[in-house]
Image 1 (tube, rainbow, N blue to C red):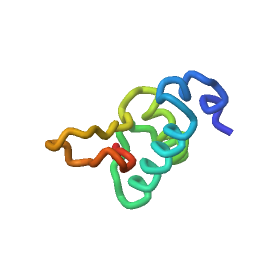
Image 2: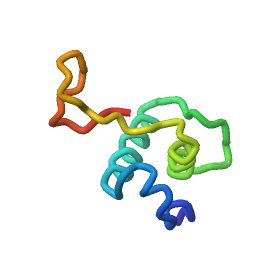
Image 3: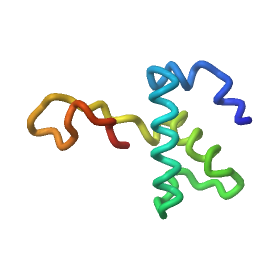
Image 4: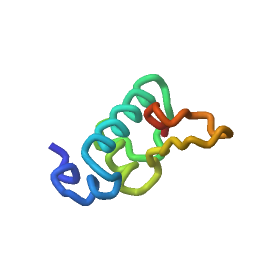
Length: 80
């Protein structure tokens, strides 16, 4: 298990376990489909890489709004 996930700091950083899980899952899918890592470390597993990207604030959840100029409607999960 990744030690960082045992610490509540990463959960608090994103505002809850669900948001953390959703963000990790979306980023893992991006990497599996050919996305480029934002951190250069060949010795990490994909999960470790994603957790490190979150902790270093390389990726953050986008919070949808009701703004008509926003591309993401309020009822949907925000993208990366």
